[in-house]
Image (cartoon, rainbow, N blue to C red; front, top):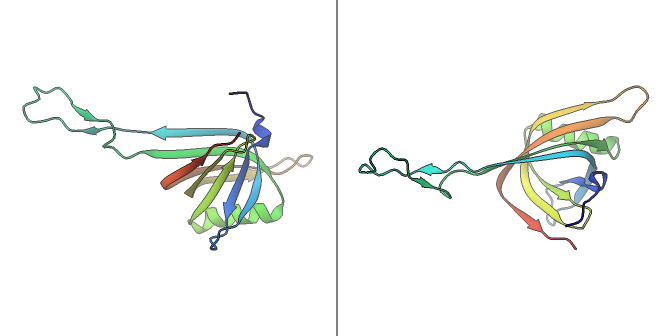
Length: 138
């Protein structure tokens, strides 16, 4: 897989309509994804005190932390509203090769800022709710 420019990774938020329309929030400067797959302990009573695990029995979590630049003030307003409203919204993470990861997320952390002589930037952490879908690119 060839390397891809991080600046070409785009975050979009859905409007909740049917069919859903997605609006670009901004482009990423950095992205971090954390998946947690804690197994379920299924040790039987006669297991001699040695743990037995079911790898797919636990609860998987996925968090994405993205830092980037806003597309415009409307994009900032929609992300701020999602953070302050404590809502679940559909998001798309669009990769430079055309791949898309889409899922329902809650904003667990939101920061915005900027220097007087630079563009306003943001950092957002999204926690997935339910299963997501990955559509491969070229």
